[in-house]
Amino acid sequence: MSQIFNFSAGPAVLPREVLEQAAAEMTDWHGSGMSVMEMSHRGAEFGQIIGEAEADLRELLAVPEHYRVLFMQGGALAENAIVPLNLLRGGSADYLVTGSWSRQSAREAARYGTINMVVEPGEAAFTRIPPQAEWRLSRDASYLHLCSNETIDGVQFHWLPARGDAPHQLAPAIPLVVDASSDILSRPIDVSAYGCLYGGAQKNIGPAGLTLVIIREDLLGHAHPLCPSAFDYAVVAKNKSMFNTPPTYAIYIAGLVFKWLKRQGGVAGIAARNQAKAALLYDYIDASGFYQNRVAREDRSWMNVPFFLADPALDKEFLAGAQQRGLLQLKGHRSVGGMRASIYNAMPIEGVRTLVDYMKDFERSHG
Image (cartoon, rainbow, N blue to C red; front, side, top):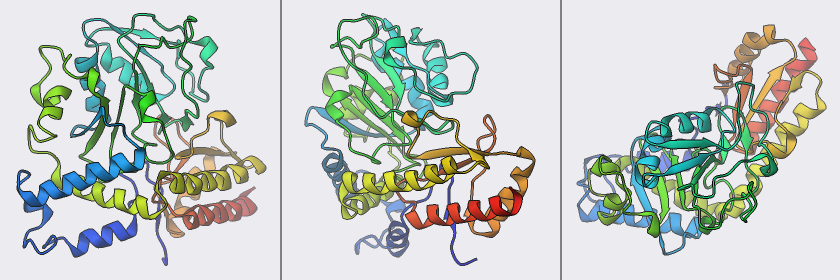
């Protein structure tokens, strides 16, 4: 097997040069005589690592000065609770459900307060983002929550909710809170359009164990009295992500990924590559009668591409053949079935070309 391409939805592929640098520095970071795993999080060495990681992230996303960057733990699942504990303020919140993960976010948030479902999602498959004209937004919500990219369902926002006074529009003062776990850093965004962005690191940022939160300063200091101190955004911000021991090694790897992204031309440069990868795969699927993607074209994800064979009885054979070609982790999520190719930042276009070539060969022999 000459080349492996890992299409896992997460923990996901990391840039090879990042892994090679981490391997070279494993036992001795920059002449310190210590592995990053051994460093005190309060020492000067790790202070340099986390400081550079934050500075590079701020540069990549053009994070405004009045936003705080928090390095936390627990992943997006924990944030499903941490967000309402910090931002509900004893009121209610609006949740837009567009897939499996945003549905889970809404269900968890409902444990802590009143949640308004912006649209009724039902139990059908998620194949589109409901047009904003269909939304029913509250005028006094503490925030509107949505998921920018549904990893399981392959549905992605390519627009921001419009603000205004109409019932379907987001009121100007209501913060937009977004689970951006699987597409942050994959394309340019205007951070100032959001009150809070959060996400697990294990898609485009680094290894599992790190959670990134970017939050506007005026939203700090409103946590529920029962919110654990380690999950209180104001406490974490005041202590510069050092209230408790942060996931030091994961932050180190994230910092290497941020520097790698800067060498790729920043977020704009990686976005052009991501769009090309997605187009290559979708164009072939659309031209084929053997494979199908069920997501509305305008809502398709650049990061996670679910697809289905015309005959599901061939799924196991398809996956076995893919593994022989070095194409790994293509099985779709158990709740959806079929296949899923996750093509995050670190997936080279050669990996997508190899996948498409295999799909063509399989179609010729089984179509």
